[in-house]
Amino acid sequence: MYNINDIRNDFPILSRNVYDKPLVYLDNAATTQKPLCVLDAMREEYLNVNANVHRGVHWMSQQATELHEQARETVRQFIHAAKTTEIVFTRGTTEGINLVASSFAEDFMKEGDEVIVTVMEHHSDIVPWQLQARRKGIVLKVIPMSDDGVLDLEAYQQLFTEKTKIVCATQVSNVLGTINPVKEIVRIAHEHGVPCLVDGAQSAPHFKVDVQDMDCDFFVFSGHKMYGPTGIGILYGKEDWLDKLPPYQGGGEMIDHVSFEHTTFERPPLKFEAGTPDYIASHGLAVAIDYMNKLGLEQIEAHERELTRYAMEQLSQIDGMKIYGPKEHHDAVVSFNVGNIHHMDMGTLLDRLGIAVRTGHHCAQPLMDRLGILGTVRASFALYNTKEEIDALVAGVKRVSKMF
Ligand code: PLP
Image (cartoon, rainbow, N blue to C red; front, side, top):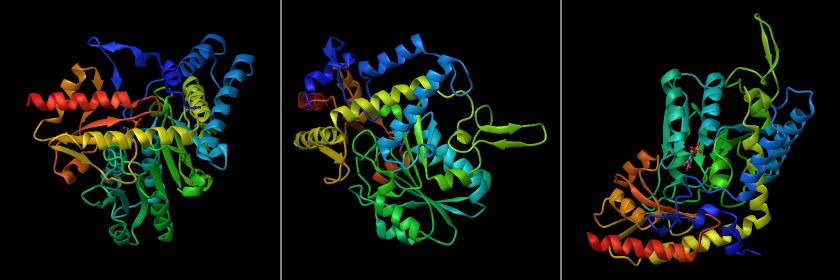
């Protein structure tokens, strides 16, 4: 049963006040709040079984290792990967993409080779490739979109040349809410013999992801955007690719044998996990996934889709309202501007009413250029938001609009 009052009680921070007003937290695409079970599990682990993982013969180290490796299995099931060895713990989406960009470009790209990205990528799926472009002279090509934020798949097909080496696409735009047809994007990439990385930062928190069905070669997401702690994320990679890619960082845990003359590496995933991992956070992430599973991914999705539909319907009735992104296939993010009101003014005044939204370019400046704007106001929803909170947002936007 999806009991919103019970759910909200799991997140005590939601009942606090800011500026003497009840908090309305609508900045979930940036980060979500954490349920008590996640906080308790992490505290419990620090209190009772804190020890470094993988290296110890002693009891606590083995307990901590077990929790860490169980978390890998929980993540495997969550995205329906074939094997736990395909699950690499990272610090987040950004680190996952940097890992792939660095290791892939190192061994599989040379000067003049091309990477295809979409015009709606987050900076974290653009800049890592640009760093490689500087280092290796590779070239970025961009899948365009329609004015309402739908990718142009015909144009995508035309971008391939014999120099195309990898395709990178976000599953859900963090600005437009567009749900991209990633399965089709992957299929087309494979038709050209090219692997595909899917950015799941804004999809994994909201609906069921199946990496085997999608057939993507890499999939990345962040724990903190799905009720887990900060500092933990996941890189899924097909076994074959993880075996082929060179290590990203060197250090402890990722080696098989080291001498001053020659070092051999562990097999994946440890090959990509140099140093002490955040094993407390991996456990926290697993508890967050269990929490989502208990509520049911389908119920979460239905709840958030209804909130999104309601928000778009209500906001669109405000004079001068411009909502970005498609009407269909739109996930739990609504970006907008009202008349000539600067997005920062809108965000700052909403904040004074207790309403937390994000303003600015949302780490997607090339997308802002495409839309011909400097930024938007963005409301983004999570499993604990309510229609009453959207009513508060709508009333707040109306009130601010009247002031201008
Ligand atoms: N990709 C998308 C689509 C995002 O929305 C974000 C964060 O907002 C990221 C990547 C980067 O995530 P993180 O900062 O957790 O690494």
